[in-house]
Length: 447
Image (cartoon, rainbow, N blue to C red; front, side, top):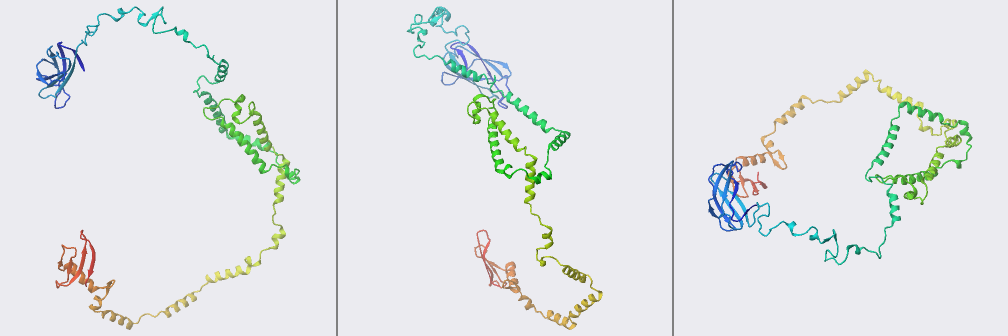
């Protein structure tokens, strides 16, 4: 809202736009102006109006127009223009006075009304009970003495020693990322072995393998109790999985720190215990499993061979199955003879079979054909009309019903019970009951 000093002449600018597009400014219009002072009724005023161009106009308000404090509302109209409204706040001070806003009670600069520091009650630059009467004692006298506990410097030092191990930026994951990158590099190297390298490693492994000889397997120098049982292997596997799970559990993203001191308690070990000894023990157990001797392997193979009970030559010759379960030579010869007989039918055999078939066939004689035709020609119109077409309806009945439905007189077509009459105009052939849509829902036939 614009502000103007009371009873002061002033210029107000306003824009008049076209009532057609409501955007374009209209120049050279004749303005009609009414004004309301401090909520009073609108009345016409005639300030000097200056056309500034582009639809802008200057209204030169006089002291008569601005003589009332409060809102001064102007409503301006012109032919071909949208109405324009201006609201001015008439105030008692001068908004355009940069020095004191024209307020009479401000007669001097504020800085001239108090000596430096006096407005704060300062004495020699300090606030105390003498310079500030509202204080009843020096601020320094209010520091606690009795019951005051000094900081736990030893505890603070211990905390600092632990936090010194943290990176300068705890949110910085570059150390962990670098470690992961190193592991990824090793894995990549393993996955990038050339064919020659893989073959060389396989050849070295085969060369180092000392397989058992037949004699060693037969010797079976170890007792069965010396071999690793499935139960023992399962027990070792469970222990390895447990330790592996605990180690891996400390490597969650963003939480891994090098393990030292009593940090091993997170793995379930007692305070001060070293996990390296446990890991070494597990590795030793696994190495023992992979270090079976030739004698142990030979004994296992010999036991498997001894357990196999293959058939002997005598058992195979004995043919312990019943003779009836086997195909005999005579049986096979009989089948072959039957097949040969099927493929050896002579021309004479074929002629004999054909002659027999023709002899058994008895074709119709001329007299039989004539008699049948006579029977067909003796069918009367009555016989045809009496023929049943559907259900119990004969052809004659169907024709009478069709004639009534297609060409008969109708009765009561405007009612729910229309009728279709016979050619005599009296006998109803079709009596129907229809619904509101004209659909037949019940039909009585009289053929």
